[in-house]
Amino acid sequence: MKNEYYSIALVDLEYLQATLHLPYYNNIAVAAQQVAEKMLKSVVELSSVNCENLLRSRNLRALYDEAFKQFSVSPVDRGELSMLKDYYFDAKYPGNNFVNVTAAECKQCLITMYDVIDFVHAARNKLGLGCSKVERKLLKPDCGTAKLNI
Image (cartoon, rainbow, N blue to C red):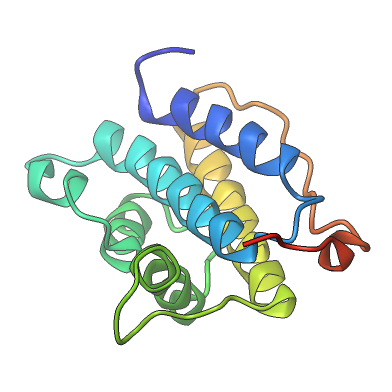
């Protein structure tokens, strides 16, 4: 793994995909947010100036908007980015906003994450950078049947 956003995002993605048979939808949603965030940062870091504050944020919409200014390729639904961003805290930490992510919501998180990856790959292609092949893997059909012993 290289010390760069894109490489780290790919490792995070591989780990996420290895857990898709488990019914831990909150964890998968949070991991999907992390992959999308690092993927977007990989493009913003290479194409934007004075973006240090943005690179420290978790704001997927702002990261996407900055990247989209440079590369208006394969648009991503900004509303879906907002939903994915919210899961980072709401599905990860206890509190008034805590949510239990459903299988359907988790699937949408994964679809949004893959849409971000498609966007980033199109941007990287415009920059003349290589891209790793990414297979769109979703939840395993029987992952919700495992018992949670919590």
